[in-house]
Image (cartoon, rainbow, N blue to C red):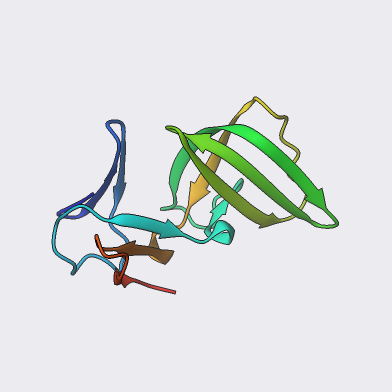
Length: 114
């Protein structure tokens, strides 16, 4: 849900609204975040944090892919570097909300930035 200058995910998670979606109306939306904008290290000091239970941890060369559960939904993080996580552990990850997308009830893109 977008409410004013906040993104509300569930009951406990509140993020600042990224620059690309501040102008869209308040309401219920599906949020989309590309896996490379969810990382184990903060890309910028105003990045938002999320935590989830690691389902799959893949290391491929110099890239790490983490599949994790957050509130019953599977999310994916893809980042450069070796970031070893253990299946079952709680991972703290960082989201660059300035690169999020919002989709309406008809799944049409409402707003966001690349």
